Image 1 (cartoon, helix red, strand yellow):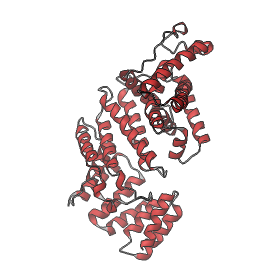
Image 2: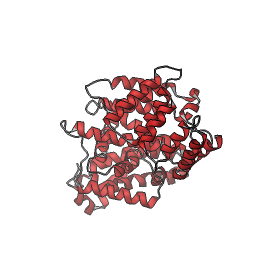
Image 3: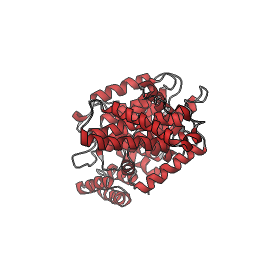
Image 4: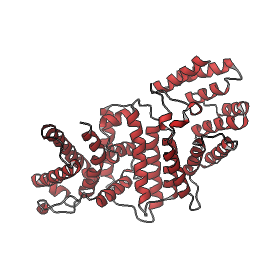
Length: 405
């Protein structure tokens, strides 16, 4: 029954967010247990009696009933959290879990800021985001991180403990805190998207789902006037441009197809259009973030027709990006743009200055740059890249380049 996994993905996160708003984040595990029990009952009941006419409404009703029953049966629990919930234990019989669209949206927005609180480590934020904001199962999160269930469970447990220790509340930050807090949220969403787009996981559908979830959460923030910002619009623009080439980046065997070899007819024109729309929306205010620059670079990459200004513009954008935030990967990407704009010899000179000898990406790039200049150097760099590559996907791509030489 494919319907139930799909509903788990979309409804688990909503009900958990609303329950956490009601109970307080210190009781997140209780919220997850109630929702998990709801889906377990759905699997048992629907398997015997068939799917109800309105499956979502059925889940919401059962979740409400389970919440009320839990509070009624667990007096100790009720007393323990009575300071957090909006209803006293005496009122549990009458309690109504508010699963209206408005409250679900508000709860999810508040959950985003809670999970992306500065006191929570970045890796823990991503894990919690995948579980609580995206509704991924533990097996799926383990797949995304190329890890195992035990490791992921421990990581999530520590993250939830941190929420309890810091007594983090599910509220939108005060007006004066919003700019700083939004920056933290933007960073987490950026990392979440990258987890899908550059994932080493072989689960293609999961990789797409992670990217779509990052896009959904970003749009949720843009839709709220209090949380909307130019950086968020630039981020969503970047996501749209990258996602537009998703289907062209892999062949049927799951192997990566490099940019120059992609079938442009597989690029999604609608996502490219949306990327341009949000990039224009981002052009307000006096600050240019790294997301503005990365979105602009991604825009130039979506041009299907030859353009003499393309690579020179990309090169200049990379120059600006490195001034804002230097990273070896950005420097390597800039070197490729330099090769396309000014020739391979100039790019080799710049690339070798980086001296990133432990990076397989560094050797892969030099192998490509030397291909038509020095066959032996090209081969040596690719062989070094093969030794240093960690994932099967990277190794397969490098081996293919070696074979072509």
